[in-house]
Image (cartoon, rainbow, N blue to C red):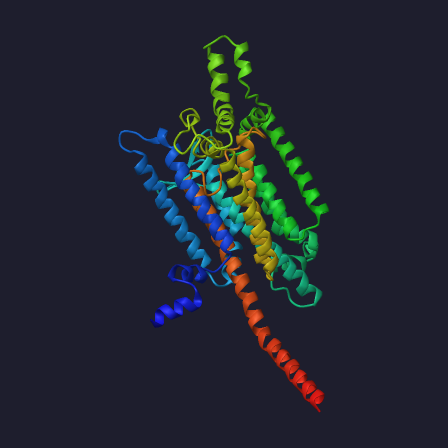
Length: 469
């Protein structure tokens, strides 16, 4: 009876008490749950072409479910971190981690348990003990976190110098700035160059060796992170101009070396200039070598657009896609087309709303953060996830060249899925810390409020007694 009375007073059962105990931004939790459930349903329906005599759809969904479970464990583990200091310390090594992985990939050698892999016409992954590690996916998150650390450290450095205190950060630059030869390193611009712009340039150049579209996308995300951190737009414009110059130098080296340096530039240009219309097939001899070459080039992007067109408003229904038998990578590079074909415009809008909601909640969480590092990290990661989602959608609907970017937390791609789980875990952890700090401040302010209210009540009682006299 007492238990029943307690539940009746609170109006909540065990399930709702469990929901209440979940900290962090609940909207982001819902977005994670919705995206992973859509992923499980879509992978089950879209991967029939991956089945063989040794496996079936049940085996595939079991494997994907395992990755979803591991992803939830990663999210929960990061979400439980209670100090922002841990993220800040780890983020300091984001550039070093990216540099090592990209260097190993660029070497294109077999180091025994670590081997660079050439997959789908590009050097993108490392095989580590047989497990595929997608280097560019790690680089995206690692560099956003590194820049969040660098921007936070830069602001601390400037505050310390303004107060004529010994700087707690950027010790290397300040030490060099104290010498005659490298005195310029003590100036703010050169500190930003040393800790931010040079790492960004190195990363983009190394990524270009494997994928030009990834280099442009990662560079854009890094510039957006700098804007969130308060770097002047004029300086960002100079950085963008520098990126154009570097790209031009890359094209020059590619031309001079007869395509041996930055060989992916030729692919990049061909994709920008590509015509995916089937009309060009009519101008070629039917079933000739050239005809087959053009057909193979346009088959995937054109068929992906057919899938969107056939989806209509409500779609064909779960499992009824026909284009999944034609588009080789519909479960990864063209997942949005598949979702629209099966679930229609309504399903596509739902997916778009989930990513837009994440960006909106990320912006709100960033505003709640009093710590500069946390604010930049949440903003940068939210833009990264949403930006990649929209790039994926633009390619699927024919806006922009093929890039090979997956749909975050929905597309198949085991390692990429886990990396984005890390990003969501960080966002949820920071939202949890931000809300807890606000709650503590409100509780600390409550006694003062109660005291003021009591004083007002005493004053009102005195006035009433005077009136009675």
